[in-house]
Length: 358
Ligand code: SR1
Image (cartoon, rainbow, N blue to C red; front, side, top):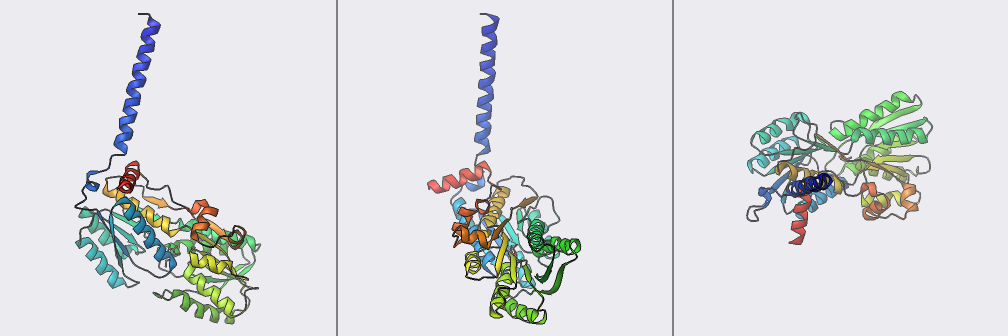
């Protein structure tokens, strides 16, 4: 046999070994971990939430439930409804139930850290949303809140040429709102004529928007020079929009906010609405990332410490021009708000496919 022929056979042999290796690697990669292979003992995930007020929280829960169902795992919600003592009790209860994983949402570090440590030591992996955690293995999922605060405030500051009298709506103590505030403060420093005239903000379980309306009406009456409202949460924005409409000031004062929902879209689209823009992710998709990440940890994956869902700026103009009337239509118009690529490990896709096939 010629040397050339021998060389060609050698090359074909090496390529064959390489492709078989790659194939088996790909197959291993998509191999569903044993824990997900016992229909008599389904995987259990606890979702422990500090707060529950508003459309964001409702849509987040729907997203978590949808992803759990698609993956064939059970999810149980525990909601403290803004009661710290109850939150601690629920964290304890969730750990006692010995679920396969726990998702914790909107806790402050001081409150949740001991329970996160306890759960992890007991072999229960924890995933967090909107919570800052002292642990390298416990992931923090968020909507890139520093960026939300930056992009939203920059949009307003630049739109107004650096000149605005701002009524600021925010509540200290909630991790995502504190991060957004950090970025906002930089703009007050950067643009001397971009001025905060007053601040309003209080959390009321089941009634934040209504309480905000009352407080914004009072703040606007006291501060007639306000021409911009910046609201770092949509429940605050809804209250502001209603207050502005009540006072018949929609021509003079515009609202810029965070978050989006079917109801927000309706309010933004209304004739003469003062609600100009909102920075948001889709909480449905954000919650699905949390469930997949919990499933990934149950399956033994080492997940990234920070999982940031990219926010998108949604303007009233975009909604009207694209005839967007609800969240489904919004995602078609702005696909960046759709399903995230995060935590779609090949075996999690295989798990979803297996479950869909029945
Ligand atoms: C009271 S905290 C409210 C925020 O939590 C989520 O991050 C939503 O974006 C909402 O703005």
